Image 1 (tube, rainbow, N blue to C red):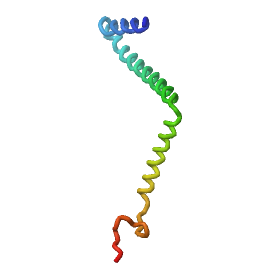
Image 2: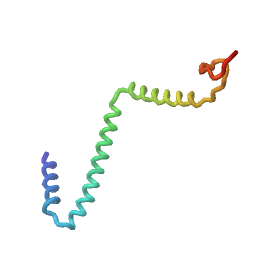
Image 3: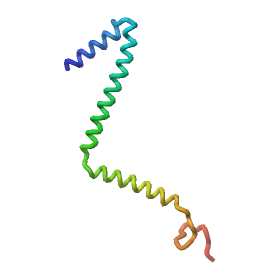
Image 4: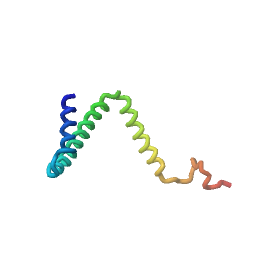
Length: 92
């Protein structure tokens, strides 16, 4: 909590009392700070994902596999024959 208060005070100094030459440095520091916070949140999210039950990962892998299998089946060549259920050819 103390670091948060100190950070807010430094931010207010840079916004209202800092000279113009320091404000350019503040822009670079703010970009670096946002990038570091994003990386920290990304790592924490990865830890949270790995704490999930293994069944979710197996289910997700099965769904991905089913998608690719159905896509491959849909791309197969369609030959008229015994199992032609679409009625493209009439048998008289």
